[in-house]
Image (cartoon, rainbow, N blue to C red; front, side, top):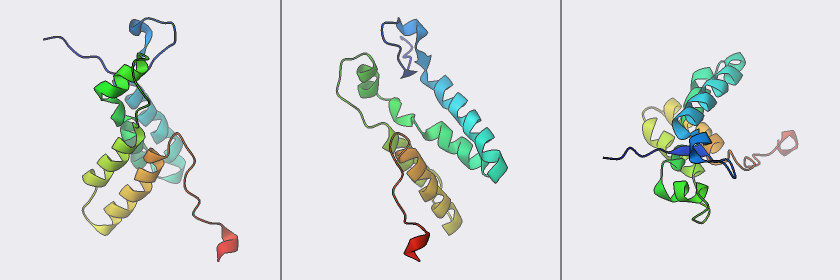
Length: 120
C-alpha cells in the first residue's frame, strides 16, 4: 500500500519533495503558538489551536488544490469544529473551546468585531 503524504504548503515551481509536510507545519505552528501564549498563561491552549488550525488540509480536495488541480477549499473551519467536539464537557471547557474555535476559523481573515469601550 502506498503511503499518502499530506502537505501543508506548496512551493510554486518546486518539486513536492521540497514542499512542507502538513504534520511538520502543524507541529511547528503549535510549538510557536505555545511560546507566544506563555506570557499570558495560555500556552497549552495556544498549542492546541496551532495543532488544529490547518487540520482541514488533511483532505484529498485540499491536496489537489495545492497541486493546482482544484478549487479553493475551506480548511480553517474543520479545526474549529473539531475543538468544539473535543472540549465539550463543563461550561469552562465549552467557553474556551468557543474562543479557540474563533481563532482557528478566522486564522486567514479578521476576527469578528465584538465591539469596543464605546459600546458600554
